[in-house]
Length: 300
Image 1 (cartoon, rainbow, N blue to C red):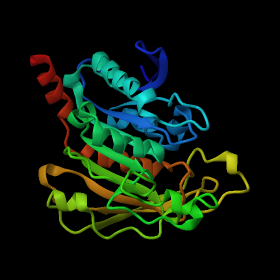
Image 2 (image 1 turned 45 degrees about the vertical axis):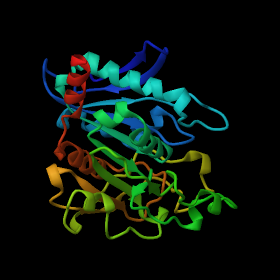
Image 3 (image 1 turned 90 degrees about the horizontal axis):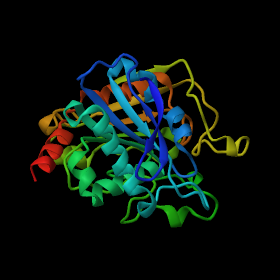
């Protein structure tokens, strides 16, 4: 198939659906639900985190929707969107078969990451099926501190980490899953050297892997702030280097990692090699929750 504009028949809403060009009948796939940030749309997210470019190599199925709420900016709202997200998962399971889904990952940028966190905290449907969460500047379990330059003038105190999912801060879900946090160097004060999620799974101290060196830029950036942005928010796409920190030996093979894109901010699109490295981490993690959850549902 490659790429289609799929339709959620329950709501009439469209979403992008990408899979390998040469997908064979019965072949297992990794399913990624890719959520954009506030003020964005699905088309932007496909370019910001272009996992679609690696769908053939790593046998990926990627669904990329857009939030329904448009004012005062596009954003995910539970009452408006959660049923749609359920329907997308059901659509994919119906199209490919639950037994073919090796793993289901939530990927979310910014408010899409905070939405992923909310779903994993509150929604049994996702708690029972999601094998991993990639937070793209959408909050870290074991929060980061944000620099004042990240926030709009006068809003730093209002948006700093609290007891709720916020920029920089994720809350630990009650379900089992792998967790990867990717962030720009300029949108945090410093990366913590420990992870409560790694401690939960008995992982060892973090280990630095080889840096990722990208000679090509990402595909997109926030053009609404062209000429008026900050390094924390993000500048134009450009090549770069990323640090990779992995917590080894986590129970059940869980993948727990931090990836820091040096000299980058919140909105520069991910470069090709760092995107591929994140996909490699995703497909290396354990899966199987969809199969178990669907089997339980079928037998109920």
